Image (cartoon, rainbow, N blue to C red):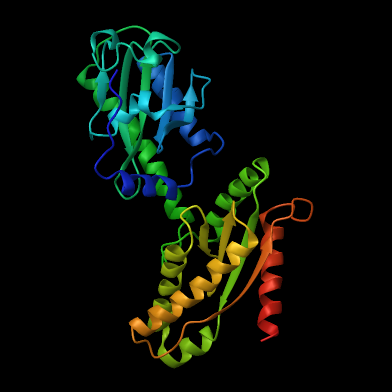
Length: 318
């Protein structure tokens, strides 16, 4: 067996994959619709939408297979993401890379595989739409075109989802996206018994800044603020712009003391970037932070409301 090598753009590829926040989410009809169509169109027992993570391939949609994921080092899709065309193995028993693969010699007994890469909105191959059969078979040019077309539908869904959940000005998550992604992160934190905290930020004097310097400068401040949020906090934290000059960060699997230290580091970074860019103003903010309490916060709206109150209390005390 030959384990798949890492792509040259692996770091970028993983960052792009994780930014979509699809891993370990519930099944969705928009993806299941495509795998059902692929299964019927190609008359195969298994059709999957796979996402190739650091050490696993995880199935966003799985028709005909009960497993949710498999190790990346035995995955077929780990090979498929290295190219921009369909990766085909017409008979695994005749291929030295796969004839003794655990997925071949035991369930699901893969004999035929065809996987076309699905791409992130920024163009990296993050997974595949793949079909699997337990008997060998050939794949025609029409088959190739059909699988590529179906794969493009998945990639288009990623783009549509990102556009719907992304703030156009700052290029971070918007309010809609935050509510969607954060609820999933909170649910996971609860299942894993991990701490979860929400920091709520409000820019100081933003209206006055707009009045004195104009909206072009105001937009620049918003973009700088968002950029520093992303660079200061972890990739696993969810940074979002939820209002005109209001931002939030959801931090999971960390202690409150560490979350507060990250906020102090963020404030210092804003001071540094203001000096570096020689801005005629200092970007500053008021903030509040609350810890998620399963008994108190029934959903993300309750958590947002408490964090908002904490921010205004802190702002009023200054």
